[in-house]
Amino acid sequence: MRESVLSRTVITCFVAFLAIVGGLLQAQTLKLNANAFSMTIFGTTNIHNFQSKVTQASGELVIKDAKPQSMLVEIPVKGIKSNEKLMDTKTYKAFNADKYPVIIFQLTNVSELQVAGNEINVVIAGNLTMNGVTKPVILKASGKIVKPGVYQFSGSLDMKMTDFKMQLPTAMLGLMKVRDPVTVKYTVTFEEQPVN
Image (tube, rainbow, N blue to C red; front, top):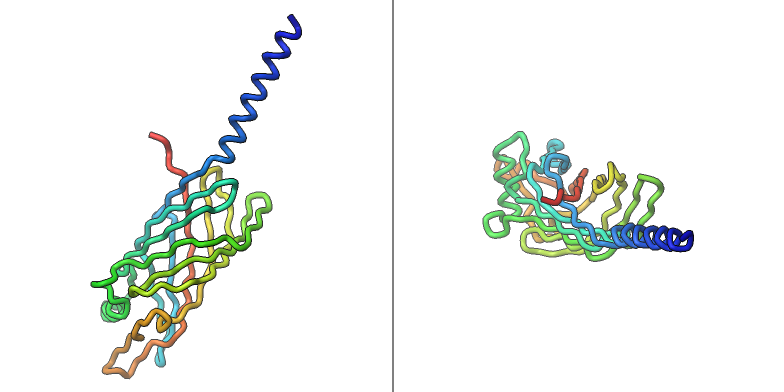
């Protein structure tokens, strides 16, 4: 009788263990939370500094074995906004927005990943596509596990617009000229979607 109870207990524990391990190993698909997203482009001209905010983004992050497996982020070019309408128009022209309306980042490799409690430091490689030109970039980000299934990352990237064959915007009959590079600072949150 005792052996029967013991056997059932062992089997129950084993099944529970398999369920937990299976859950950890199972791939999680997380969606970018547009309401917990911020991205700002900081740049300079020969006259003054400027900044533009990215107001729209979508994306997906797949995590398996506690490691990012794939990530895709898409940003509509016309979601980039400054306080100056003329500056926005010049920006869209530089991006060739009518022909290439979306900026795309796609993960290719995770070269470094450090997790300490809820804190995460990661270095990833990916392809960034703007103006129809794709270039490899390296992103270093610090992040945290906000709660189970919710990950937030912050970082910055310096890049040259001319690397993407973009013509630097000018204004005031060419008297004001945007300079390379620009700095992009971001905070992005990915969340596991509830099962319907």
